[in-house]
Length: 511
Image (cartoon, rainbow, N blue to C red):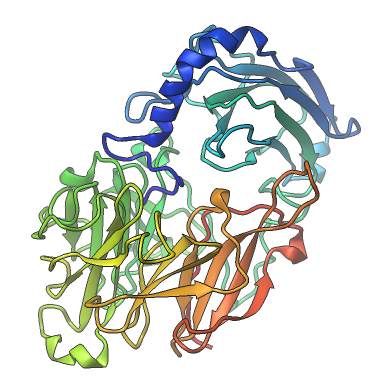
C-alpha cells in the first residue's frame, strides 16, 4: 500500500506532475540556487553536531524513476542534486566501547509553496558526484516526510568519507537545513539508547533480526514492506516492491535449530504480482491463507493467494471493476452475527475485504465470501463530499465481533475513518476528537483487541513555536463503544523523546 500522501501509483502521478510543471519556472530561477554551505565537514566523537544549509531550490529532479533506477540521477543543472562531503573520524576502540553507535542525518525545510514540496536524502560511501540512476545509495530516506532522517550504521574506527546528496524531488523555492549527529548508544538514529535490544531472558518474548540474503531481490529497499505470519506453519511471508520471500525461522527447520540463528529465506514470488505499483501482502490468521496484490485496478488483476506459504499460487481473482484504483488494503476477520448464515466450509467463517481509494476523495470496499477467490461489488466507505473523511486510508482491520474498521488521516480538522457493522454493506464515519491531521505522518492505524476495544494510532500535528521545525508525535486514543467516543489520549513516544513518526501500524491482542 503506497504511503505517500500524494499517490505514486498508476499513470497519473501528482508528485511527478508537480515536478514537471515546475521545471519551466526553474529554468529561469536556477541561477539563484546555492550549493551546500559549507560543502564539507568532519564529525568526530568530540566535534559535536555538524550543520549546513542549501538552496533555494527551484528545479525539480523527480528521480529515481520507479522500476528503472536504483538511485537518483544527478547531473548538472538539468538534474540537480546538492552534495556535501562528510568525513567521520573515530578513535581506536570507540566502536568496541559503543557497538550501537550511529550517525544520524536529519534533512528538514519549511515549505514555501502549497505544502507539496518534497526533498529526499541519499548517502553514499566515499566521494560520489554525478550519478546516472544505476548507483544505489548505501543509506537513504526518500519518502514524503519532513524531516527526512537517515542513519549510517554500523560504524567503524578510523576515518571514513561519505557523500550526502539532497534531491529536490518537488521543490518550491525552499532552503533546506541538515543536522549531522554522532549518537554513541543508538542503533536506530533516535534518542541515545533507544532502539537497542533488551537483555535476553529465559521464557520472555523478544525480538529477533533476520537479514535478507545479500544481492537478492529480498534486499531491495524500494517499495513498502509487508509482513504476513502463518500461525499454523510458523513461517513469515514478506513483500516489498514485488518479489515475495518466505522466511522459515530456525526452530521450524528440519532439523530444527536454536532460536538464535538466521531464518531460511526462499523466493516464493507469484508471477502476476512480481511487478506492479502498489504492493500489499496479508495473511489470514484463521486459515493461514496469504493474499498478495500489486495493482491499481482492483482485486480482479495482479492478484494472487496461496494456502501453502507460496509453494503454489492461485494467480487470479474474480471481481467487478468498481472498487477504487489506488492504495489497496486487504484484511479479514469473522462475519458479524447478522451475517452468520454466510459461514461455510469454503470461507471457514472468514470474510475478506479489499479496500482502495481513488486518487482523491472516495474509497470503496469489496467483500469476499469465498476466502478471497472472488469479490462482490464495491461499496463506498466515504466519498469526501458528503463525508468529512477523504483521500488516502490506512489498513483495513476486522474486529472479533465482525466490525470492519478503515482509518483515515484527513477528516476535516481531525483524523478518523469509516466503519461497518454489517459486513461492508453500509458504512458510517467516525471522528477521533482531539486529533489533528499531520500530512507527513501518513496513514493512521486501528488495532482491535479481543474485547473489541479499538486503539487508534496516529501521528498528531503538534503545536510548535513560529519558524520551528514541525513535530508529529505518535499518539494512541481508545474507544470502547465502537468509535462513538474516544478517550485516554497518550503520546506513546514521549518517554523516549520521539518528536516525529511516520507510517504507524498497531496490532491488538488479548489482556
